[in-house]
Image (cartoon, rainbow, N blue to C red; front, top):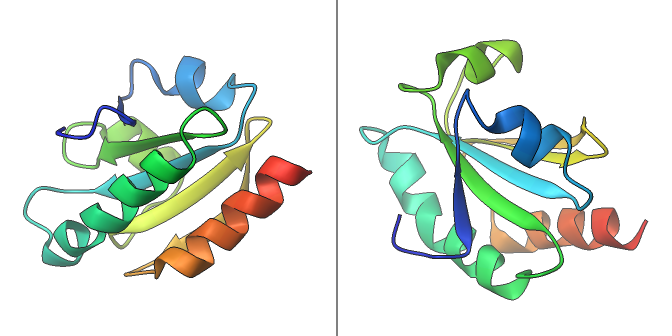
Length: 111
């Protein structure tokens, strides 16, 4: 991943990096072959830059991390989940604009 602020979450590190995080975590479930997922990349990169140090932003490749994708019932991609305290607090399915994601991050970071 080109953006150093965007983490790569996998089946192996998901519990530690997402569920046990002391800050909110925005997780983009995506796949390399998914065109809408590719269209969401600039938004995810911008959010990672804007919220660096306040929240974690990362991606799960649904093809290589099937356990996590199955656990959270990812049926369509892109799906973006916002975690806080190890729980899903917001879910966005499909292309979502930066404003909606930023508002959810602001709310999670403030609470």
